[in-house]
Image 1 (cartoon, rainbow, N blue to C red):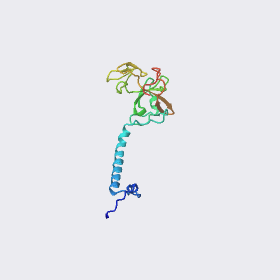
Image 2: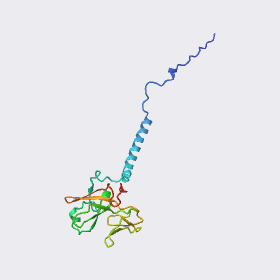
Image 3: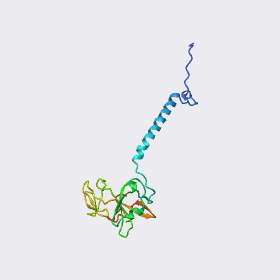
Length: 189
């Protein structure tokens, strides 16, 4: 007789995992904490950089902002309206863009402001009262008093904004309606 006992076939239940869940090891805990600290630090460092590339919001849609000087102080309407008719006052408009406001012949502000950024390469330029036009010195573009292109290389008119006086404050808002110079949808919308 053979002293060896026959081997039993292992049951499939013997290969299963233990029912109790293993606890987090010290190494796993330290790896998790290190990853959380690195992710938090990276997020805090990248937030200002990401915020830099997002243009600032200028109030609610259609509500507008106050006209400001180059230092960011609101400009009283009486200051600009004290100028003679035909005067073009340069202010910091939407998103700080340089914007010209015009005093009309009746002493009121023109409801249409003109953003002073050349549509060719974005240069800013002065109003030339002798030639009665905006003249970009960089590449020679010329724009009429209403911001329409008179000579290239710029191929689009200057951007428009709404101008409204309430009390002694000047409000600037985005122009989203049809461009009165071209009769088409504005290119900047």
